[in-house]
Amino acid sequence: MLDTPMIPVLAGIAAILVFATLAFFASRYKRCPSDRILVVYGKVGGNKSAKCVHGGASFVWPVIQDYAYLSLTPMPIDIQLRGALSQQNIRVNTPSTFTVGISTEPGVMENAAERLLGQTQPQIQELAKDIIFGQMRVVIATMPIEEINADRDKLIANISNGVEVELKKVGLRLINVNVQDITDESGYIEALGKEAAARAINDAKIKVSQQERDGDIGAALADKEKRISVAQAQAEAVTGENLSAVEIANSIASRREKEAEAERLGTAAEKVASAKALQESYLAEESAERQRAKREEASQMATIIVQAEIEKRKIEVLAEAEKNRVRISAEAQRLRIELEAEAEKRRIELVAQADAEKIRIIKEGEAAGLKTYMEAEAAGTLAQLEARAKGFQSIVTAAGGADKAAQLMVTEQLPGLVAEQVKAISGIKIDKLTVWDSGRTGEDGKTRTADFLSGLVGSVPPLHEIATNVGIELPGYLGKPAAKKSAPPTDSKAS
Picture 1 (tube, helix red, strand yellow):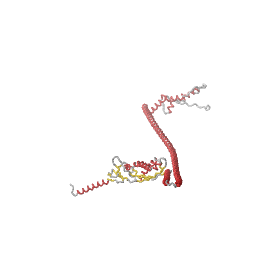
Picture 2 (cartoon, rainbow, N blue to C red):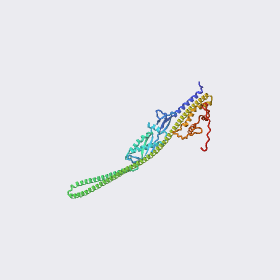
Picture 3 (cartoon, rainbow, N blue to C red):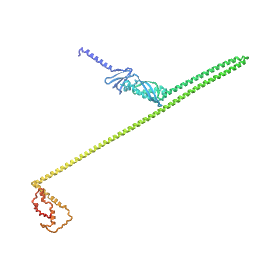
Picture 4 (cartoon, rainbow, N blue to C red):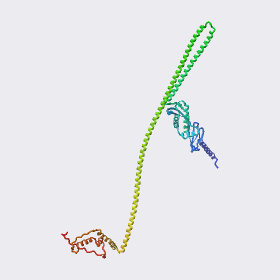
């Protein structure tokens, strides 16, 4: 059993451990502020790269997970778009201000976590600016310039729809669009404004003239009704006056004359006012037609200039492309020639190496064959010499000594020697022999012809001389050599 004093210590340690564990887990429980998105990344499950939380909290497991925040602060972006082509190929300047921010829409937040996490606000603004620039050019290219200038709401709606779709791909949303002004480089929009102002002024002038005319006509009619009423009252007053009828008739005639003159003057004034109104109306219409003609002329001139500029640019692009094509073709030709030369050089080297290897193999084969042939020939010669040596040894043993064996071998060669002696004179061809002999005999009793023949036979070396020359003495049964005769004295006179 534990000692009583140790129980409080262990309880304190357990309490500290429990408190430390709770504090650690509490530190890993992350709450997301309302102006941010909590991105938990790592092993989040569900085959997702990150888990996004907005307006809530999430527990971040240690080691296998980590977290970061994405700010929802709106980002204003100034777009100074200049030179965008409209549907009529007129370049339009539309400086605008866009306000974007990171979207909190499910699915789009994950795009922001994947593509914007870790980037600074200027980097995000630059990315959004590139997207907005491209979409604004696309939208303006689909609208005529009159519609761009007159219907701002439709322009902003088209831009918002196009930009919103592209911004969602990177996790952003469009908050506000403000198009500041719309101008063009050719002055077409300014001409449209002047035309509209002139038309409004002309319409106002026409309305003023019409109102003045209506006022004059109304005044004349009121005066006419007044005078008619007065005349009727006066006529009723003088009907009872018989005595003064003539005077009244004269007065009435005079009055009527004056009234007719007044009516004539009123009608003339009315017609003059109407003519002035019509003249001003015609002048306004003429001015409007002139402005319309100027606008058409400006439009046609802009179209011609734009087409000429496009054609010029097209020619420049084609020339540059042809230049690049020629340069690339020349470079490709040069590279092809170099590669062919290098390949030919390599082929020659390989052929030379192959020939050298072939010659080496042939030479090695010839050397090996020659070596084999020489070894076989040497072995054959050695065998022949060994056999001859054994035969010589047997002959020496059978003859009873080397000297006798040598004499015996020389004796065996005598037939060949005699044959060689015979060959010495057998090769002499005597087709015809004419001998002039007087028949006288010499001291030895032989004629000269006999001496000639005996001398011819004597020119063949005797057998004993040949044996003596080789150091062999023939046996007695082969005869003895004849004694040499002394040469007859030489007649000095005969010689």
